[in-house]
Image (tube, rainbow, N blue to C red; front, top):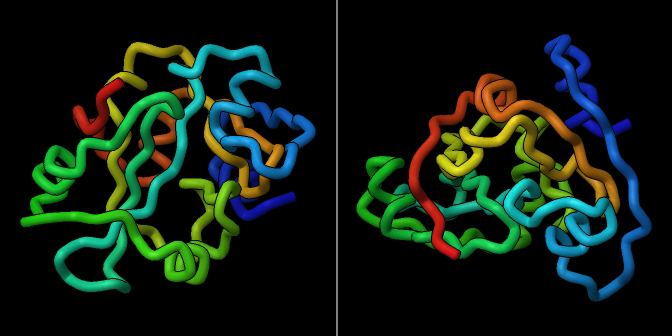
Length: 157
């Protein structure tokens, strides 16, 4: 069990947990797509962003694992002047998860969250379930509901 799985259970949504053997040094999201035999467009990574309010003012961006985050688009969607990738140590401390296993679900605090709009065309998305080698599958609308997220065009391939 992880806080992410607990959050999905508590919300009484339909979800499925998938496990795979994580190999040290592998790119987490792409590894999940490969080992679970999924399209990289269906597997999403959770990125923690620092806003212009300071290092402890984080936001979450959820984008396909093969995509690059558009920082300007994310800042605009968050109504910030700028955003930057958060310091990994701060991200771990404020979310309660280790890098490579940061889930958008069940974080210590709820942060402003964006989901790349490409998720809306999918029946299900896969995000970290809170541990390396553990993914949770759920509908994009349910992910948005559980995280209080809005959909926005925030990535590019």
